[in-house]
Image 1 (cartoon, rainbow, N blue to C red):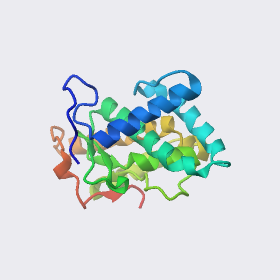
Image 2 (spheres, one colour; image 1 turned 90 degrees about the horizontal axis):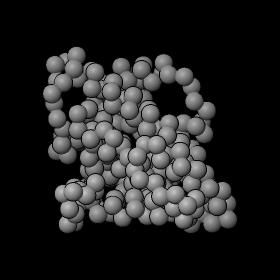
Image 3 (cartoon, rainbow, N blue to C red; image 1 turned 60 degrees about the vertical axis):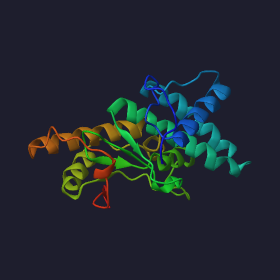
Image 4 (cartoon, one colour; image 1 turned 60 degrees about the horizontal axis):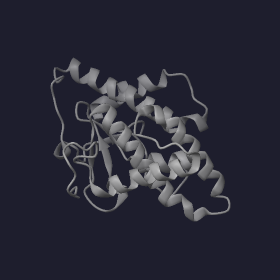
Length: 203
């Protein structure tokens, strides 16, 4: 999907319009709920996590809130990662199951909409897309080992956006380190490089 006319000076430059609209909606939702507008800085993720927990409680009475809130949350999270790690969106269709946020300098991707569902539901038991990290096959063993060595998080903490960004940053750095060992430290990736060879970490 193509992005619409967005000024090169905008932080959303190059971002497909559906992502822009969803991410801005999340900022609107959070501002209405807590009186503070998140600005896509990683430091805002605890605030967004607080909103996600509020939505989780509301689902008991209004389950129809899940899809829009989760998709908006995922778009916001994807934008936080994109801006902090110089990543990019791969949005080949209007089906959010196909959406990926991808690394430019590390070959790693995930569906951030799935992260949004995880954060609101508090588990991976939902009808949204999988949030599993996707890597090249040759990176999986070393990254599995790197993550297994980390202190164990409580399940609720693992599904928070703050923790997920930390994990994604660890994986991103680990993939860059593996690329450097193989002599590919200057490699830059674009959307055409992300294809069927990606495999889910731990899968």
